[in-house]
Length: 429
Image 1: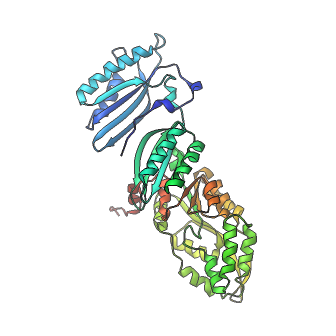
Image 2 (image 1 turned 90 degrees about the horizontal axis):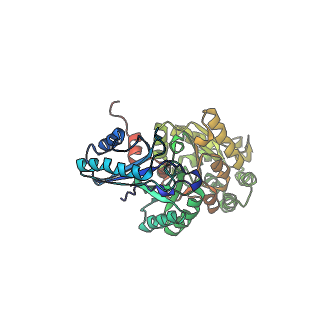
Image 3 (image 1 turned 90 degrees about the vertical axis):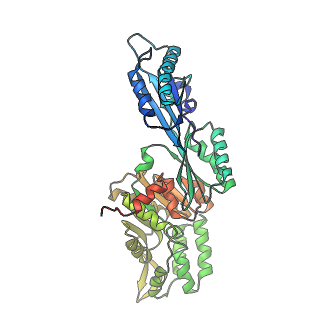
């Protein structure tokens, strides 16, 4: 796996320039104990014409025993006046030469940029996550080309997982989220890989609540289609469902039309359908992992509470919201009772659950596949379209087209090792 040292040239526009000189120190060589400590010890000691410095940025990667360490430092003001940039670099060169001789590594010194040290300190880098089964080389090449094309620079690459999907995380500086998503969407379409873009920072790993759509997301298939088949109205309901999921028909109106076709079905049919539900591969792993990491987990469905409530209980979920079928004399009436959970209703349910647990909306995640999920996906801090219709993929924050629901974990930045640690019972009891 390649590691790319810090490139300070793509961090901030010229108007934010800082006149203080800055330097990029790049350390390469065989990894061994003490290299990092000796380098920073020398910087702390200073001397030989080197003024006190501040550490602005650090990046270190070890690949197959080979160390790549990038350190950006800035000269602190002195009582004698402005620090001369050339003299600063020369002094640093002499200082780190001793580190190189003592440790056997190579240390290069260069100006951080012509725009000063703040060219490195500023900027909003992003994570670009490539997922596939497998990830083709064309996807990596295409992503790298697209990133460069919008002025971005790849600062680091690491593998997040190799099972059930392979995922690679690229840390990219110098490009905005909108430009990256637009450029990388074409790469994803042409290579078949999934590519997600998220801003680097604590917000990515501070998510604390997730809601999942049920039909064709948490479970395979559509529950109402199963019910309609038992009522002998499968073709009619399938046409209405497709129109609603593609955004061609108002969901509430289509829901009532589909439910009306179920009139007369014995209530026992609901139990039969529920017993035959098949979870999407990776669903249990996703939920179990997030629960052990402290997430609140729930489902928000345009389906029916008679199906979703027992499902939520069996998975140990914190909440569930769905429509309720009206029942009279042991049979479905073809009507609904209570509030309709439609497209805006799903977003309201997400907000209600987040408020109940004191979790800000920016710390929530929503996953769904249909047009009726869009309000919920856009209201969440991160909305993920999972094997979704085109209209949903285009409008969600990011999209996954993998057959495994636990690929959501890699979009959230969790590695395969972290997933295994979270799902393996502690040996201490």
